[in-house]
Image (tube, helix red, strand yellow):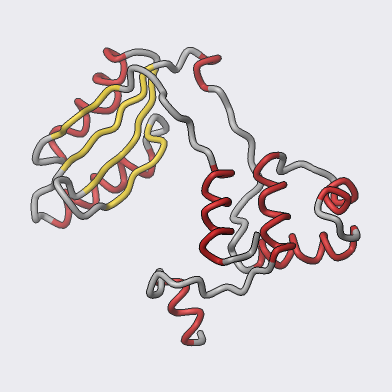
Length: 177
């Protein structure tokens, strides 16, 4: 592993280690809007040719810039309406912490879990049919594995994720508009 690979794997120093040009950023922005766009249409949209676009998308995936091509599912259509953000701390017991991590990895109602720096060691986002079901299926089983849970239930989404805005910021900070 090169020094550059090691820095990228560890998060580096916060600097942009990959050299992406305007075409790469145009392609990423188009893929954010529609990850299933055919290369021919994508090439027209970014003013390039199909072969170049295909190579660039492959390179972006190989470098880990594009981690996956996915869909955005509205889980409320399946009756999953209770979303919670939960903060927790653990004891110093490594076995208990590993059991907590196993629960995070295997509980399908947990959408995302992360180690954090701040008021809580770990934050996670969970979803279920309703608050009672969330309590029964996620929060109660976690209680013996934690040193307390702090739960906030989402009552209204003010702004859903907007990767287009983040791409705009990337363009501004890299000077590749």
